[in-house]
Image (cartoon, rainbow, N blue to C red):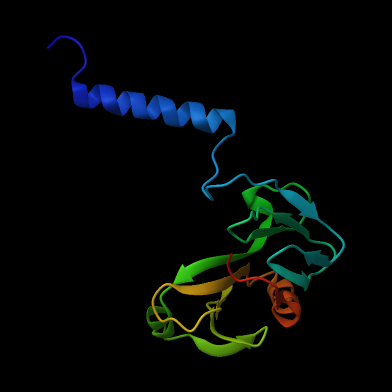
Length: 165
């Protein structure tokens, strides 16, 4: 068989386009431009939330006008190995989440939610709307082995400033 089949040609073209986009640094899954900002010092605030956190940590704010997306690191090297937790908005299914056997009912920022711990991770789902399907949800997800204190400080001090546009 001579040449490249149409199907293989399309696949190769798609791979080349994805490679070029990722090399250019233009990948942004949020859909709008995001200007990442780093916060240090133990106090964080953006248009979505504000909270206190242990001052030895660093917050990388990847939020934009449509999404809240925060990552916490144990130093200014924001590689995945140094990530200790994250805080972000998502749409979840409240009914499915409530079925977890280890789920504990909680309140964070005067909003109902559930907390799930397994020894390795502590994760809270805070329901920002009354919906049961496509529920606007604030998620706090942290390494429970070394950074449960960071999770707790943020959970105790977080203020939800904006839910959606």
